[in-house]
Image (cartoon, rainbow, N blue to C red):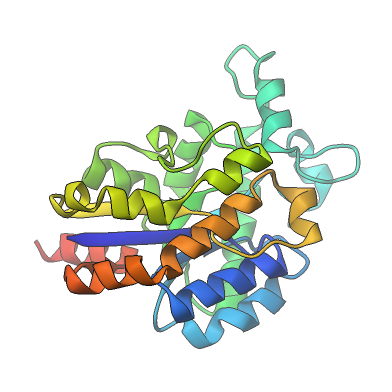
Length: 267
């Protein structure tokens, strides 16, 4: 069995980033996507650079957390009066009043996403290993992401998932998360329990996908995301000794997006 483990939101805060680094060094993370629009992006990149040979570093294209890269006057439909991205909840509420369920200008979405990709290339010195959409996505936003994927020749996670697992990004639900995201539900959600209790079922598959929100928690995260305790629990799941022993003893391959794409090209 080939297991693709993806840690979303690298760079959302310093604490989350530190937790993902721990999960790379001491656990099973082989893919993570970075936010390039945060004030501490460069600092977080410095933290992960020693591990770039071990992982795929993608980009989480983001129009719902923090400030944009572009001047706010260029993307007025994406930001509030303080120049901060509308949250995913705020964007979805605005979509309810739009005939086509998209309050945002797709030209603005394209421009901001491309600016984020360009900043990645400027800071890292190469293209992202994959493109992934963060939090707020619609069918039209996915089309923008796919268009940029094709323009830059960067794998798009939604298309890879559709090919390997039969669902795209809009159809994926994290099966071990108990919802709604109350503190009690988050602390009772357990990736390690999910993996260990489903291990026989999972081993029957050729490919398995685990997309989580691994990380530590800081005050900045509490301001930016409703997903906080989930991150501690997800980090425990991919550094759990019993889980890691199961992966090793079952000869499970931990794979990266680049390996999947190279395999597909070789067919």
